[in-house]
Amino acid sequence: MHISEGVLSGPVLLGSGAATIIGTAIGLRKVNHERLMTVALLASAFFVASLIHIPLGPGSVHLLLTGLTGLILGWSAFPAILVALLLQALFFQYGGLLVLGTNTFNMAAPAVACGLILRPWLKRTKSSRTTATFLAGFCSIFFSALLTALSLRLSDTGLSQAAKILVLSHLPIMLIEGGITLFIVEFLLRVQPDILDFNSPANTNDLS
Amino acid sequence: MKHKNLPRRLAGRQVFPTCLLTLLLVGGCLLPSPSLAHKLRVFAWITGDTVTVESSFSGGRTLVKGTVVVQDASTGASLVQGTTDEQGNFSFSLREAVKGPGISLRIVVGGGEGHQNEWILKPEEYQVTAASSVPEAIKTPQSDQTAAPAKDSIAPPVTGAVATPPSTITREELVSILDERLEAKLAPLRRSLAQAAEHRPQFTDILGGIGYIIGIAGILAWMKSKK
Image (cartoon, rainbow over all chains, first blue to last red; front, side, top):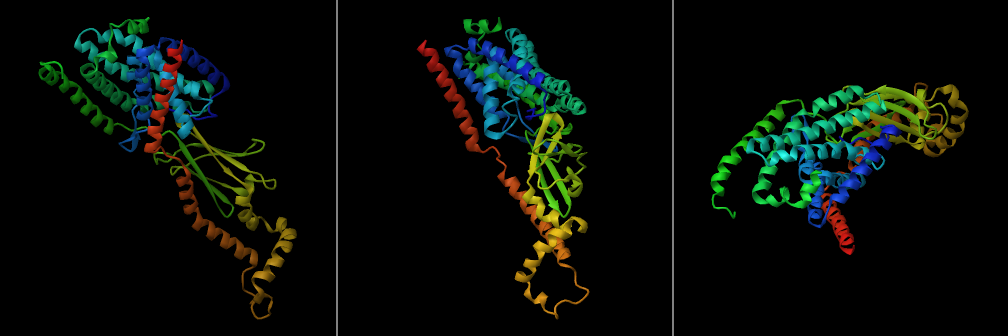
């Protein structure tokens, strides 16, 4: 879902770029000393996940882990994803520097939204936690695909057909991502419950 | 590992996610898979007068029905437009595209999901082959000058009366055929060169990226601690 350089129109680039700056500013303010390494850890996870392609069917897929990032980091998903995408653009020419704002917004905004909305559900019963974590993975990809399609549509690139396919074609990834997010969160709750600690003041602050 | 009742809790909890995961992976295999590659590869080569543009995703899948726009690299004026076929190829005639002398061609290929990449075709790349296939009318004033000295130096026997039977092909035709054959032979080589030049993520790159992220976090931590 990396949009290449030179595809989008100016207003789309500027609008999403401004949104990314705001999101990153909020995200950076939420980061405190204890959370800093968690943010770095998830930025690394995002950076690596989208580089490792797993052959599946006729093509290949890779994880994005945006749902997980949003659940754990809340607003701080913005700086984490921004840094990871910046490095991907610089190292591998995935996306580009001008579209960095758009790509970051398309990935991070659904992550933050899913994280903030679904996080209270993690504290309730086990089944609600299972549903919430699965939905976090599933919905973050769904809305990321939708935002990417919308960016293309708004720029009127003549790719509106491709935009429609974009959302549909990501369906397997949404399912896989939901399952993986569920798996990772369950694992983290067992080995490192602190990372999802809901009682600490830092995290309740995140939810506000 | 701290909890004593962990094994029992584990058994109950782990079954569901694992089952779900397996189900999803198997289900995912059956569904049509998207082209989730990051980058579109574009490659163009010349055979005689025809320029063939080949495009594929970095995962190896071809780009079907991608848009191709051939531009004058200096002015940005659109010269040729079209879409790629089932094999991800698109060809156009060089003679129709290039009217002026020695312009660089920028071949921009766009695919679904906002992928786009380009290939620059420099005049020195195509002029050799183009010159040999340009219509005779345009060519005659130049070819006399360029071909004549070469004829003497490379093939002296030709000047002798014995070596030129009436049925032999002209020098221009020979050059054209040679160019065509040579280009056909070189095209795969050039394609693999272009592929080799493409930078794929290596293990070291991935480690480097993680290092950068940890480093940035370190700088942030240091800045925050100074406050």
